[in-house]
Amino acid sequence: MTTLKENRIHNRFAHKATLICSTFNTDNYYNTQKCNHGGGGLCFECGFALKRGTVLNIRLKNCSTQGLSPDTWEGFRTISIAEVKWCRKTNDATGNHYNVGVKYYDPAY
Image (tube, rainbow, N blue to C red):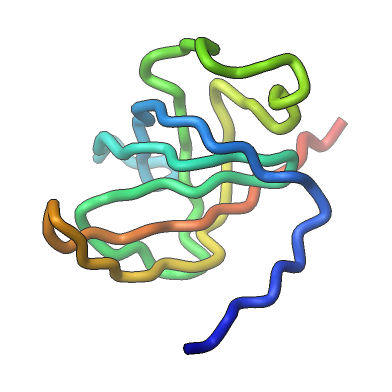
């Protein structure tokens, strides 16, 4: 089994929440399930593959911070533009789905 090397600058914090995602500048949107977040991006699950480099609008559908301690607020965003960095197919008891890692775009200011 191959172990993936972690190259993250920011810590990761597990936090489940429903997200609404859309490809940038389109009207097509879909619900996804956030797995974790950090200062530079987040990971979510969805029912289909997303191509690396795709730019997404991501919005937290239910803006609950329940279960987040103050030190886990790093990288917690309610709305963001992000780029798909990786997409991996997984198969578990609920069936096939994809885990998607995205990197936030930083504001220009």
